[in-house]
Image 1: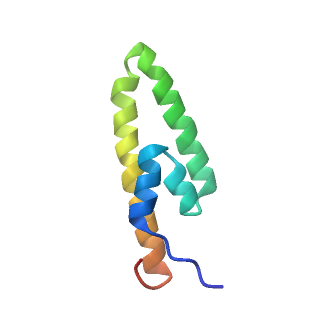
Image 2: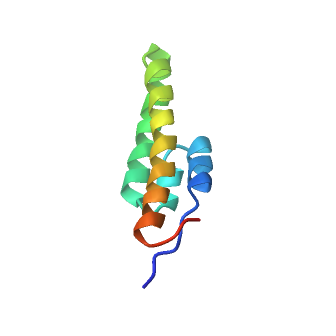
Image 3: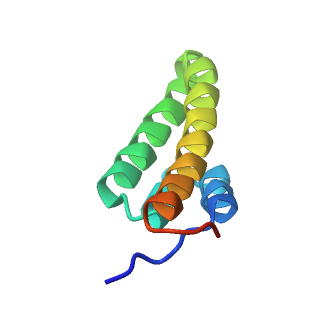
Length: 81
C-alpha cells in the first residue's frame, strides 16, 4: 500500500504551534507524544528560568525534525510534495 506523501511545510507549521504535532502528522505518534510532554515540562521549567533556555532550543529542533522527517518520508516513498 503506498504511503501518502507528507507536506514538510505543513508538518513544520503544525510543530510551530504545538511541538510534537508535526511528528504526529508524519505518523510518528509516540515521538509526537514524547515531544508534547517534553515541551510541557520545558514550559513549566520557565518558572525556575532554565526553561527559558531549554524550551526555545527544543522548539527549534522540533521544527527541524518535523520538516526533515516529512521530506524523508516523501523521498523514501517516491516523489516530493
